[in-house]
Length: 112
Image (cartoon, rainbow, N blue to C red):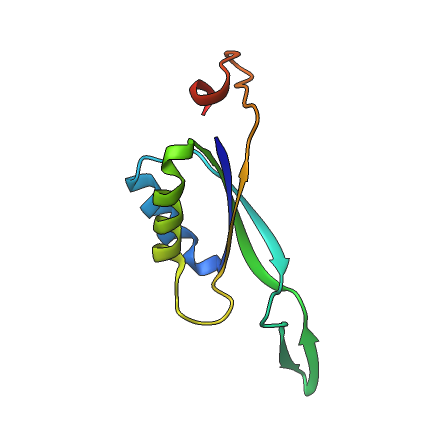
C-alpha cells in the first residue's frame, strides 16, 4: 500500500476530486495548507503599501491506495491539476506498513 500526497492549487480541487471519483477512489483527506516552492511567494499591494506574501494557499490531498493503482492515480492527479504555470504543485508517494479500519477491525487492503 502507498500513501499519495498531492499539493495542488485550490481552484483545481473539484477537477481532481471528480477525476479520482471516476477512477473509483472512494476516500481521501483534504487539508487547506500554505507553502511555497520555487515560486517563492509574490508581492501584493495593499492600501498603497507593498508587502511580500511568502506562503501561498494550497490544498493537500492524501490517499492510501494499493500498490497497483499508484501510477494510474499519479497520472489522474497530474492531468487534472495541471495548469502549465508555476506553482501547480507536487505529488509525494510513500509506503504504508499497516492500515486498520477502526469500526470493523479490517486490516490492510480490506481497510482501504
